[in-house]
Amino acid sequence: MSNVVNYRVCDEIINFIVSFPPLEQIAAFQPSAEACQRLAELLYKKQSDTLSLVEKQELEQFLFIEHLMRMAKVRAKLPQELDQAERKNWQLLSKKSLNNAFSADEPDYSLNNFI
Image 1 (cartoon, helix red, strand yellow):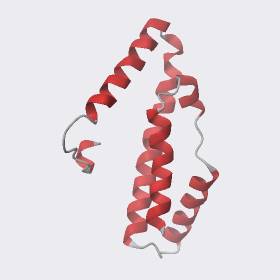
Image 2 (tube, one colour):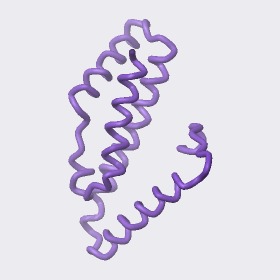
Image 3 (cartoon, rainbow, N blue to C red):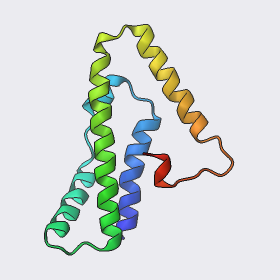
């Protein structure tokens, strides 16, 4: 069952990212109540030393995604100093990079490609 929850939480973040939200929405992003509840459950299990291997991987994934979102939120706040043309270029480059990343015949989903 935790795999289904994990998939849903990851889907939540992926759907947000691929919607190419304006920088203001990235800066204001908050995870859903379900995501927060699942994270609380995993942290409780970690403290009580009852995490399964799958749950440990799920927690590590949560923490990695949380780190990426924190970095994205900080960067989303920085472009207030950039002019509109630079912001538009950033959005176009982001879209182009994402489209190219998923154009391979057989994508490699290993963690090495994300770090």
